[in-house]
Image (cartoon, rainbow, N blue to C red; front, side, top):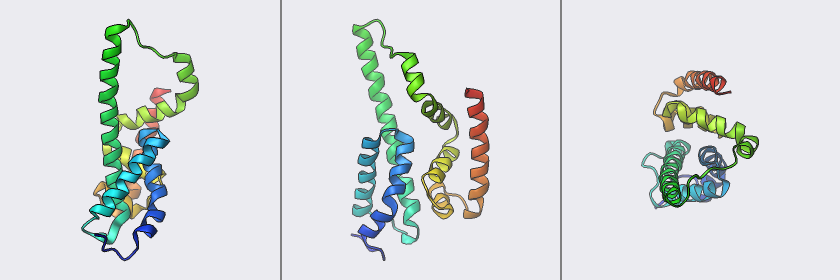
Length: 166
């Protein structure tokens, strides 16, 4: 079981908001993000990291993997649903004006993030989810001293890609 200096409750209270925010950035669904965050902490409880010195980094990595797995599953499900629907209907279109008005900014940010390489995307999501440089370094598998430079480059790349989109 859990052999860490902090209790599970302390770890949960400390990291849950960060993990939830990180997952929310990726999946864009608060209810699903809460479910995924719970899965992350269940995994932590059942099979904690071998090296206890950076729990935040471990939680971040597991959270990102779970969120990306969810997106892959959702995408596959959506494709199957659309294909099934299109067999019965000519077109499946939502009102583009309504979508643009409600979700323009969010969708552009998500599109740009998905165009970035995985490390840069994760770096920005982790930074904006409140993780420390040390936790980001562990999650990305880079040196702590490289995190600031990695973030700056990722932000520059994001800005370039975003400006091309709008």
